[in-house]
Length: 198
Image 1 (cartoon, rainbow, N blue to C red):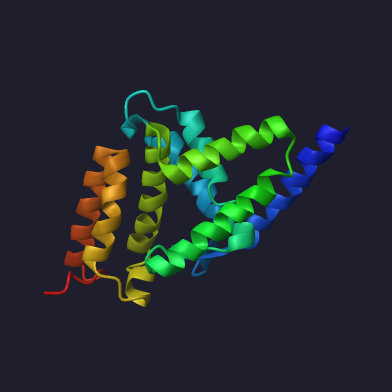
Image 2: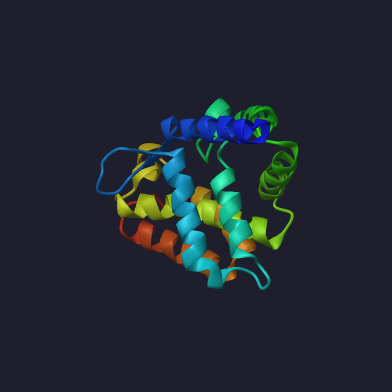
């Protein structure tokens, strides 16, 4: 029963991710996305877009990574993708501390396996992790397009800032990277993303 109790503590704890709000506004709903919805969306993207992953990528591992990757936001909260380097460094430290706490709720074997996948995702050390991170960067772009600018407009984000994130998508999937570049060009042409400053 001790193993089951540990697993249930973890399962109960991760439900708190539904209460973590992100910057992204959801198309057709007019409200902020929560981190659990974001993770679910990425898992579905991994299932549907898996044929654009690097050769040898394991779709199940990718889906597991994207479902795990934001659990740390239960403690650390969500940080806007365009936050400055100092904010990013603080967030990284908070997320590592959160990972230590949250994954420790599990039995040792599951703790090690799932924490290992979280570390792999965070460090982008494998093709699976790079593809998972590509999906994580692409999904908010799709939402911003669907709502006519979203966080790009609200935070005065410019095309060069978005393109800097596209490099991470390209690193995980050349076809998705090309799609993302075209998306940026379309957004600029449509006036929902500001062009790069002259």
